Length: 402
Image (cartoon, rainbow, N blue to C red; front, side, top):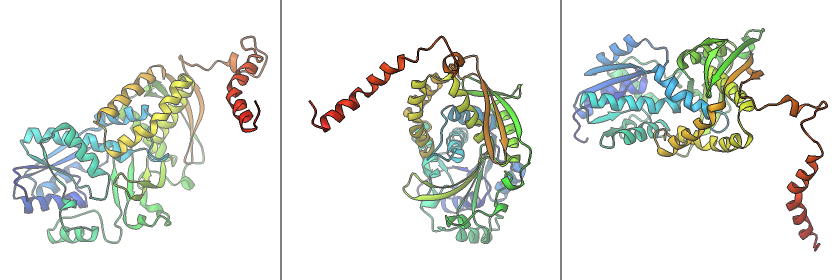
């Protein structure tokens, strides 16, 4: 092992990081500081602190990052309508750069020369953590236990934990892993590794099953300012408060369950199951607000950038210059995304039923099917002829016409 004086470990108290906390002490013979980020995952933080101390941590930091997470990470991503491979709302991906940023800050406070994480050598999180470390402190040493130890399975981790009297929330009988924050909960591994197997209903810990959700729809109104949701049913809310309120509504009405096989950055496919109730509602509402406030060409250019932006978040390039450039462009487009969207939430569905805006580009007097005095339908003939001219020429050439 390389010479290291102190390590800051991104610690959750789960199976992997509980084992890693002890393993680092044994193998590097130096102080290990446990750092846990509160990003809305409903933990008993005092128990997490005590468990880290009992496992030998020299110090413990538990940082409340919920407001920063919602304001500076989730909401900018929602302004971009980010979605990976058409389904995944990037709940785990967007949390990693914030966790890693705070970890680097604590390393500076503690005078640590190394950081560590619990991401495996097969997954995306190792990239997300380490790209952030490199972007913010290029001199920091990085310890990635999953890439160097011999505890290469969930069962071996559980055995190590038992040997060192470390309690863990995962058993060999039910070995899927979970990751939770205020945007989503993810489930991977174990019984989910068979893509044909339906997830057991008792696995879901947040959203109701659509079959047992209320039989009466819930109507809500979300007000936007510069692309950000700022009020729910007329009540002003901070980003964190907004997401929390919509999470409750969405979870109660079975909104936000997703089961997909995605392409990891490292090259393999992986099955993930996600619950993203509030984020699903917000993205739906935001797109509806844009539908009446964004110019067509601006919208189409921005829509062409969504896959690239989403990849950058998924791959871990949050602090890369290209993501920041795209964000600036996207935020410029949001200046007129103001107004209110009305939604009907019902048994897993989030349905737009109304939208209004002081910046609306929708003009009933132009769009009407009734008689109007502002649009000459004859003008369309020349428009179509010009659009079709190249098609006519191509057809003439193919038919040998001069």
